[in-house]
Image (tube, rainbow, N blue to C red; front, side):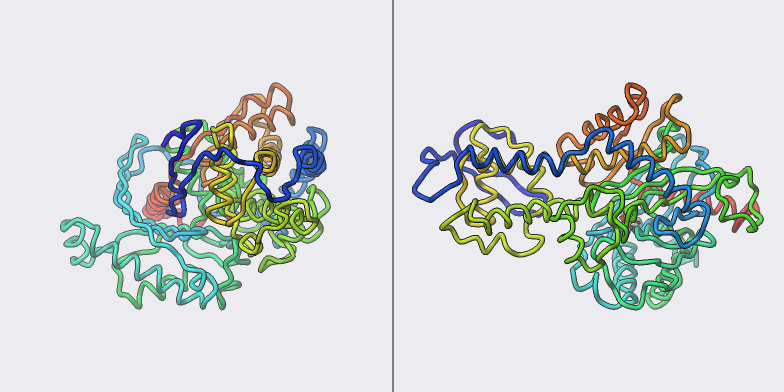
Length: 499
Ligand code: GLC
C-alpha cells in the first residue's frame, strides 16, 4: 500500500505480521526523551565509524584481489575460490524437465523447471520454512526433511504425465542447490567445509553432502537422479548468462553474501595436475563472505561488529558477510540502540526489555525505516511501538533512520569492493560487464543497487559506470536446472567428469 503523509494505515511485513500505524499529534510527551541536539551529536559519532571513504575502499579492493589470487593458487585458503566443475557458459539451447531443490538460508524450495531453449523456461515451485531446530539438529535428518518435501512436491505438484513417466522407472535429473561452502572434485559431490548463515547441523561438516542426500532419496525411494550439486551464486551466474550473455559475475546479497564468476582453467594454478584442458573455463564459487576472517586486517569493523561476531555460532568466521548480509544488519543496529539505552540516552523511563534479545530487530525493519515516506516517520513509530513497546520522538526516529542508512550504505559499498576486486582481476573494467545479483537485500532494500553503483564509481572513477548490476534470474531454481542440463550433455558426450 502507499502510505499517506498523515492518518492511519497498516503494512504487512515480510514475516507475515501486520503493522498498524497512526499519526500522533502529541509527540513530545512527558517521558524524558533525548533532544534533537543530543541525537545529532551521536549521529556524527556513528557517521565517522560507519562511513567508508573511496580511499579506504580502494585499499580493501587491493587486499581482496590478493586474497582471490591466493585462493586460486592454493587449496585450503580462507577464501577458498572453489572450482565448481561447471564448465563454461550455457549455449542458451539447453532443454528438458529438471527438478531443483534449494536449501538456502531461510527456506527450502522445490521446483520443477522446464528449460525451453532460447533463454526461455517455465517453473512450478513450493516453499517450505526451515525451523531453527532443523538448522541445528543432525544433518542426516535435515536431508531426510529435504527428501520428504521433494516427495510431497512430486506427488502433489507434478502433472499426471510426469507421474506416469516416473512409474516407468524413469528418473528425473535433479540439481541440488546447497548454498554453503563445499569442496568439489566433480559436479555431483561436495564436502561441506563449514556451515555458514547460522546453520550448525551435526555430523555434516567434513562430509559429502551429496552422498548424504542420496541416502535420504533412497530412504524415501524417490525416482530422482542427483545430477549436480551447486551453489546459489553459480546457479545465478549460469541462469543470468542464459538470458543475458553479457553477464560475467553473479552475487547473492541475502541471508548470506557471496559471488561466482567464470575463470580460465589455465589461471587456476591449484588445478594443475588434474588433467583438465587448460583452455576450458570453469565457474568459481568464491565464498567471499569469508574474506578477512580470523585476522581482521582489512575491514573497518566497529565494536558492534565485533560483538555480532563474538556472539555468533562461528566467531572469527565469515567476517565480510557479517558486515553485509541480511542476517546481521538488523542486529548491528539493535546493538547500537542497546548501547544508547545503557548510556541513558534513549528510552529513559521506558521498559526496553523487548529490544534486548539478540536478533529481534530484523533487517526488514531497516528497509522499512529507510523507505518511510511520511514526514513524521509513522512507519518507525509503528515498528518501535508495535514490536518493542517503546515510544519515540521525531528526533529519535530521524536518528534511527539515519543509522539504518549508514549501516545499509556501508553494506552496499563493501559489496562494491568485492565486485570491484573480481572485475579488476579479470580486466572487465574497460569493456564493461553485467553482474547478476539476487537475494532479499538486493531485491528489497531500498537503494541497495544504486549504492553499489556509487561505490563502483568511487573506486574506479567514471569507468565504474561500465559495471552494472541487474536483478538476476532465479539461480537456485532455473540456474540449477540449466546446470543439470549442461551436465547431462557432457555425460552424453563422454566428457564427464572433467575432460
Ligand atoms: C553464504 C554461503 C554461500 C552462499 C551465500 C549466499 O555465504 O557460505 O555458499 O552462496 O551465503 O547464500
